[in-house]
Image (cartoon, rainbow, N blue to C red; front, side, top):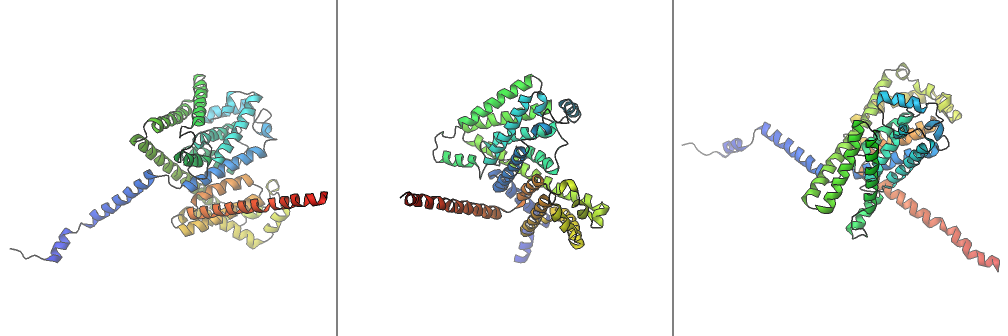
Length: 412
């Protein structure tokens, strides 16, 4: 008979290290899965990139309104026939190649502006994000040699935004959802949304029957239409467990899209930084000097030449650009360091926009950088903008009121 030993009993009952490791990994996976499926992750960050990219594209379209025909229309050096032959090789999707008429081009251009406004305001965000993507691809794939790096970022992000639930906050959809929960007028039926998707499905049926869509794009667009129809049916007639499952699926897709966007931004910076390292001008620290002397991208020559006249500033800017771009993906694991790095990147892009005259590139990259800002910072910025708007409303009418009060005295 063996005597009982508490120490021996404790050692025998403790799980081995490998079992503890697997148990810990399983707990982490369970918490992550619960976090992803239980709600929309990073709702404020997705709203910011929605607002940023739609505002950038809208500003670009309005800026080029006068030159729209020379860039994307019938007067473009890149003719409709040339664009059709080019797209036959790269299979780029653009509805502008469905017809070469002037009226069709004007309709698409105005529709792209309207879709940008819809997405900016967050009105029927699911529909707006899909129309926004179609508008971006229609114009950029019609004339692919017009834009710059900012246009390429918008091109990519417009596709990713379709898979996100970017209208959960700071949108008209969020306000309408809150009204529906409080017993709004339509009771959650969303008649306008139903009509819009019915029209979209009718147009999609027509262009599919006419053979205007490739197999891949037909499957993608029909997939969106069927998914929206399934969501409406479940929301209207199966509000219990089926709706919960649909919500979970939507949250998972949203989380995957946000992850892809984050990885895409990291790839942009890391590839840009590593390619710069291979260049001799970046290695000797003089690349910024030559960039500031390019006549076609220096709207303020005196300012650009003043910056380029200092060898120390040029050296610091050249090496600093490479360092922050290469280091950016590795600084995302610490929240404080990430916030500082995002501020540095935004400042760098603001300088590019001013010195090199690339405002839309700057707006697009700042919108992409804002994905990595903490929620507390975004809420602080939002509160600051709200206070500024309220202060403006309180101050601006004051002179008008004073003028109205003094007007009877003058008449008398």
